[in-house]
Length: 236
Image (tube, rainbow, N blue to C red; front, side, top):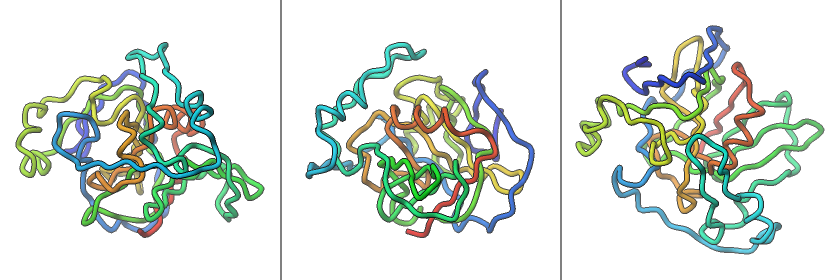
């Protein structure tokens, strides 16, 4: 199934919403560059600073997930700044519990829990020239989706042409194990929240507007996010 000439998803685990949400138009409509290895050099860079969680604790949090359709490897947490490890934080907000807030300027995604608390995840975001902001909602969600590069991406990156018929699900698929598709007023925006197995990408601007979380974090968020959930993307 082709959505807006962009991403095709034939997963049997696809869920779709047909309702709209009042919101402003997104400031840009562009596409995921591809976070998986082999789809072009992204110039990723890691860092290591002090944080509130030890790397031993983080290693347990980001352990392998062998029971998945495609077993997910453990994250090398030494390649992530500890400030991007998943944790509960103080985050006063007027948004309802369950709302997702993306803060691209700080490379964080928040899930509002209520009572001034949010779960915070480290993220990668759109690179310069592909940033956008606005309100949207999760119009559908998919496990292990197929990824099809849009024509505009193939024009920019001819090496993606071999996937014009769709890249099968798997660890090297740019959308990863779980994807949340963002909609406005009943239409797919071409933006997603997706999962990545590349820890060096967290805390970087590497995509064409989409937002990526470590796969273990995306599994955590995906399981708590029904279709229709509000998503707020803040200005960078």
